[in-house]
Structures are given as structure tokens and as C-alpha cells.
Length: 304
Image (cartoon, rainbow, N blue to C red; front, side, top):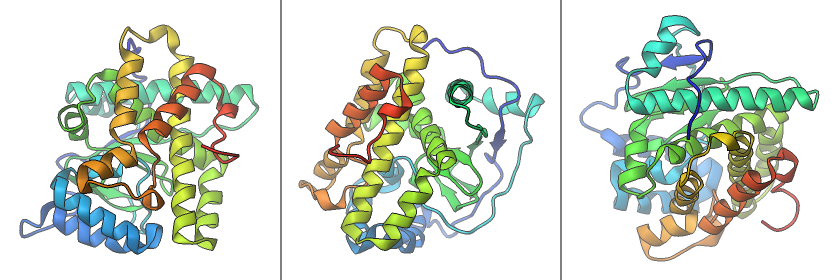
């Protein structure tokens, strides 16, 4: 995808090399996993814990690739490392090719959604892009590579360990710059949901409902973020290159709940889905791509 260079005034923080939350004693992803089990249980119930443990046993430290976007919420404060704008932004974005591409996608998504909000008379507030390496801190608690990219609504941060892109290409065979752009745009979609109040409404509904109902609401939230990613791509259609759309669809297919569960445990448990099937993720990414209209991303009405 032929994106312009990122704007120097985007809000970027960089926690790489800052130490983050040390797990100590070689605990690695396993220590993180068991620390996260209470969060997983509160959000997805005991069934969610069982599924995550199975996935961890199969994929180990790459568990974050399975969990995908929209990480959970904790209460630990965030720590800002790099300031907005100027040389800090450029030094962070130019650290490697993956960082540069993430900054370009983030900047493009920010400009696109700011324009879309302006047209509809809504107030837009930009999020921040936070790089971390292995471990870090967020307004929602620990940031760990095993969590994969995630959005934290309490500090409006999109958290990214760029090593995830290598896992996406090698383990899930979803390579290409647009596959990476899709990941960033999906997390940006969660920010849009936060601004519109959708995330809060879903959290409140999940608190009132059963585990199964909560999972179903999570699926609809994630599919809408996929659709919003497609809306961003549609707004920048002139910048798409041959094969880009296929890269995005391949990534969406690779991280569907049914595909991941089948690989991890040899069977599919639909009631435990939290992100949607491969077919659903592809469908809603296409809805956004083909329509370019955020209003068409209503995953909460009718069948998905």
C-alpha cells in the first residue's frame, strides 16, 4: 500500500528498552498468562480460561497472535516514555521497517477518521500509538508480547510489539504491508468504538448477561472493528496496490476463532468465540472495503 509518510505530530510513545514489567526468573509468557487468567475469567468466564490454556499449550509465547485485538482492561497506570511530536516521533517510527509502516498506517487512519468525523459533525480525538518490546505498561495494566496488539480505552492507546508482524507472516502465513496495516486499522477501529460509546455499551451489556451472551457481544465488537478497518482502506483506495486486499483477507482468515481453535485443539467451540469466525471476519472487512461507509458497519443488528 502506497501510504504517505507519517505526520510528525502524531502521538507516539516508545517503551522499547524501558524494561516494562519484568516477569523475573525466566517466567516469560507463562508467567504473564497466569497473571492474566483472572482478567480472562472475568471477561469470558471459565470456558475462556480453558480455551486460552489450551491455546497457550500449543502456541506458547505466540499466544498474543491468537488473542488478536482489543485486549482486556486492568487498573495499572500508564507510563509515557516519548513525547508527542518532533524527533522522538521520528526516532521511534524509524527504528525499523515494521515501526515505519505502523506509523504510516496509524497516521493515515488518524487523518481518515478525523475527516469522517468532521463530515458528520462529530468531535474526533486522536489516540496514541505505543510501541513496546516484549513487555511494557498501559493504562489497562501490563503490556506483553503474548497479548498481541491491543487497544486500551482508559488511556486511548494502541499498543504494539512489532514482532507480532513477524509472527503474522511466519506462523499465520499472512505477510505483506497491507496485512500489517489491517492490524493497525483494526485497533484504530476500537478507538472509534470508544469515541462513539459503543465499547462502553458492550461492556455494560456483558456485565448484565451470561458468559455466552458476553462472548457473542465481543464477537460483534471485533467484527465492527474489522469493518472499520475496511472503511479506512476504502477511503484510501487509490493507494492500494495489486494483492493488497488479498493480503488483508488472508490475515482476517488466519485469525478467525474457528481456524485458531481447530489448529490448537482439533475442534471448534462456537460459544467460546470472542472475535468471530474466519468467514465472518472476511465478510465484515469486505463490507467496510466495498461500502466505505461506517454506517454499514452495524454488526449489532441482525445476523452477522
